[in-house]
Length: 82
Image (cartoon, rainbow, N blue to C red):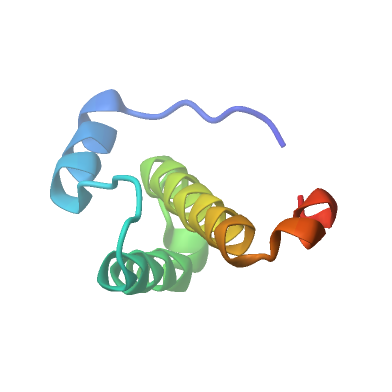
């Protein structure tokens, strides 16, 4: 997968309207999932900037799930959770 060139003004505008951040609550998690779904629904009509935002949101959700799994896994099993 190659690097796409994005318009920084457009991307900045998307970031300003979406305000992605580290997910700390269930409400924020659900909101991020809704934004991901909306961007995915755009399919082939998704712009490079929307694709970059989608990748960022997916990364935040995955990081949250990974952190949640580690923090709720019993200590003796944590060695096996990646």
